[in-house]
Length: 76
Image (cartoon, rainbow, N blue to C red; front, side, top):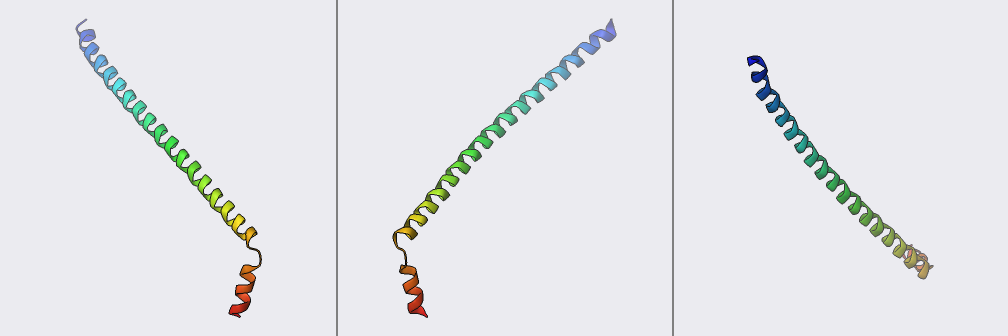
């Protein structure tokens, strides 16, 4: 029985280390998920901005047809 008593603290210590490691991994995973969510939001915001700029450029080009042609001819 003396050997069993010596093994008990060792097993309890190992279990505590394992639980601590699992808690650290869970924190890291939560931080990673948070960063991924932030990056996804930034990507959506940037995609919206790019689409909006492209829409404005298309509108601008459609509103002023031919003005660029006149400027090119004058330069030549």
